[in-house]
Length: 98
Image 1 (cartoon, rainbow, N blue to C red):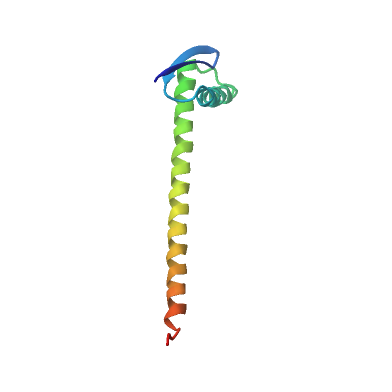
Image 2 (image 1 turned 60 degrees about the vertical axis):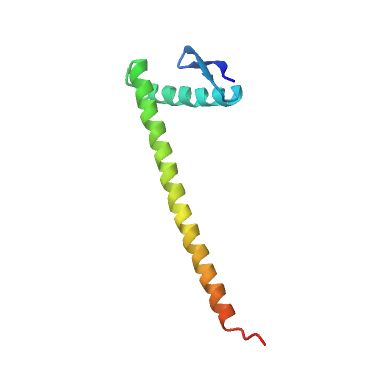
């Protein structure tokens, strides 16, 4: 069931409809608001629409970086697991069972 949550982003009130928990939606809105305010402090007098676009690009960059980091870590874990399995198999291949 869709819920409506009132949030404030960069001084504007918005109603967001969705399935997500109200606290979670609020957390997302606060994050976007923070990004927009951070960009606004850069000293340039950007209109709100441009700040929103820049915030979206910055947040997307963060997402892509996290995805890349996750992929690198997963690859490292897979390689280490493969090396461990090969090492264990080598150790057990030397054992003689009677």
